[in-house]
Length: 434
Ligand code: UDX
Image (cartoon, rainbow, N blue to C red; front, top):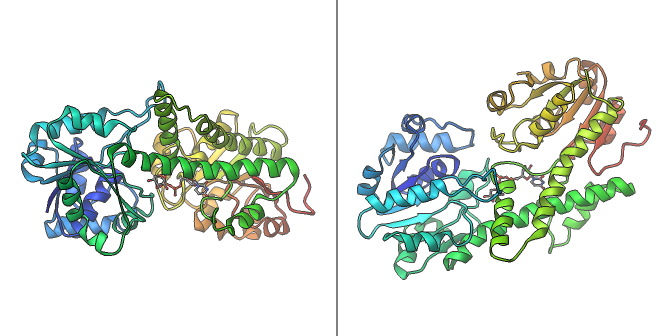
């Protein structure tokens, strides 16, 4: 089939390449000529495992092309996927639908009669109905659930497909688009527009709630002397709860969970169904950052002014160079404001971090980052940080003091190598001064 993908950011570029992989002829459309030029040359302007290979393969095979022209897209596509961003509005926390509205308007002007326009962007419930009413084109909603770092895998082998459709024809078209995915046994849920939109928002709200739940338990453990890692392990054995998304730590960040729960809370208010617990989920999440700053002060003897602080991690999670709402960089920036001399190290996200936070120091090598540090903060759990040898690291730093903001380092091992070790929701190791 001939598909277009409007918006070639993280979601759109992945979707376009994966649709080509499924055998379709795909035209990616973006208003940014630089993005279009890079992708046309087979280059992906962000870090996503497996995606550069797919883009290179299909730009070479001719199944994947990119353009800035909506007229070309309209003439080409039988199905148009809208994958543009829905950023958070600074004033209210609501989703900014400017790009979605512009994409639908442009498609309405250019799409061939009978073409199907499929929304994939995360939008406030009610958007699909409004767009279908305002434009003559046929509309469907097909939310995505992809995780950064696993975007290709999550697109080609999703846990489920959700089709928000209001006609048998739209369902038939989407079934044809995803035929190989459905043939592999992927569950399909068809729904009306509001339900399809809500699946995405509800899923993200649930995941954020699960993380904030375990982080609230970490706060209780800190107050009561318990250990949240052991607690999470025991909770996870309950099939009804499950072990995933129960890692306590500095909390969630990234381009999705924080903004999506705020937008959902805002939309729910509008609908007269206040989801006040989502504001608490957000507040618990932000408090974890404060707690790391507090622990940093405590380990530096009440004040971080003049202290050399090494921050391990800049990306909002490992496997990504995305620094949007990164808890690690939020903490680094706070400590810098309080007068610390902060050096950041990250295996992938240094360039992005440097652009956004030019006042922080950056070290390209891990050993350079550690050398001379008065305090180390482990804030993004890259596998290479887990492999740091505490004894070797102790020889590099000025003072062996560390906060594990991700709850993955072994407290006893670090304490045995002479480190003062603090983690969120986990007691300080025995035999180590407080
Ligand atoms: C998320 C959803 O998983 C995905 O389905 C949706 O489409 C977009 O948002 P993503 O933002 O890529 O994906 O990251 P994810 O792997 O879900 O992690 C989100 C954040 O939660 C990260 O900051 C991560 O460090 C944090 N997290 C995750 C925890 O703090 N604890 C956990 O147990 C799991």
